[in-house]
Image 1 (cartoon, rainbow, N blue to C red):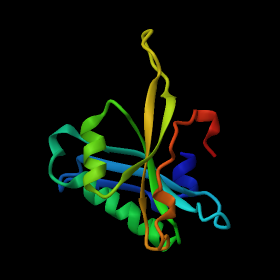
Image 2 (cartoon, helix red, strand yellow):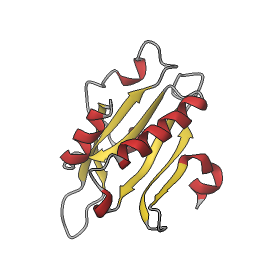
Image 3 (cartoon, rainbow, N blue to C red):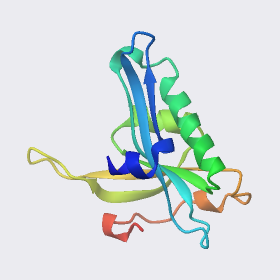
Length: 146
């Protein structure tokens, strides 16, 4: 609820004509303008199974990117499990690239080991030199993320 209260424009719901939930995206704006790190962040993106492969996720991402542009963001970022190749490939098709790997970002359950994440980014028009998407040469730990 905190996200919805602070960044309502970053919470977008897609409904079918009958009112059925098709999908949603939730995000926020964060970072430092002075260090050229002001950006939109995708916190969650979900599309119901029966509405997948229709371009809905791409449309929701596009809407969040447009909001981030209007807010003066330098880039949009998101975290995705390294093992989720379907999502990684979709984000790459949408213009995102791997900025860094975050070691053990996702906590595991059932005794499984923690899982790494990719921090993926897409530069926006304000980042004319595309500095925000230059990949880091080494992985980081969750506590190293600002």
